[in-house]
Picture 1: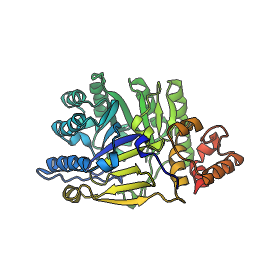
Picture 2: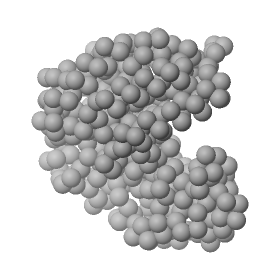
Picture 3: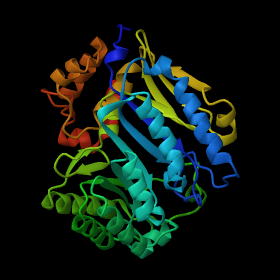
Length: 377
């Protein structure tokens, strides 16, 4: 494989804070529901030690974005979030316009907590609302109701330095096209610039997987998707990625770096990283259990992206972007295209799944994105 340019590859930071009040039955993330006394402080210390030991991955790069995910990061004390951000600031590890995102559960959104986070640098919030419909929330077994969701949005709207994104889920048991249409209408009525919208998928390692669930038929799911597209477009929201919609180009810089094949360093239990070296690209994952990570925060399982696997690894990311990526942008970011990638690209163009001008799926190619991506396997 060709020599890469790690120093010139944009770098993001992901920090995994794993605790939740309960295990949502559709969630297969690495979470914990039994926080022990003193464990939070021990984890923060381990994360900071991990950061210090990661200089070989960071090199002299500054983070273009930081994302506190989980779990439910809003269950962690603000003073402990501050310890991490002050360390990053003190060591001059952040770009001047760094996007710093923080995930919230609606019930943990209170003005004092949000204001404190804003004061220490958090400038983007992602709120896991999932639905404004009571029946849908009950089907998902969420620990908040619609009123909690609206109250959270009202509170966070008062902190002007923080941009807001919310999550919505469709294709849920007992959900109808009409109830989902109302979810989109409520979203559009709020002063929010970004939406992450996911179809419910039943993953093997979830509580839902063990149950017989009556989810909406494919025709209803397609109807929901069409309703959402029409309403969002009418309100100046446009899809820019498989699961993401934005107004006024308020894209998630952190997620865009993932899809544009940038690097990301993951800290915390089970956190994933993708790091470019001069002669290779490696994907790594930390120890998953909280106690294990605290004892050995720098231990990773790593897998090198092979010469044979590079094409599909690249395609799985770039092709998620609705508007594609220009060849000039790839050249600017020094993203290497192999001869085999170019040949597969040509095959996709012949099959009307890919456009000629950019690395971009056609409308039909985007609709059947898995088939399009698999051209590069």
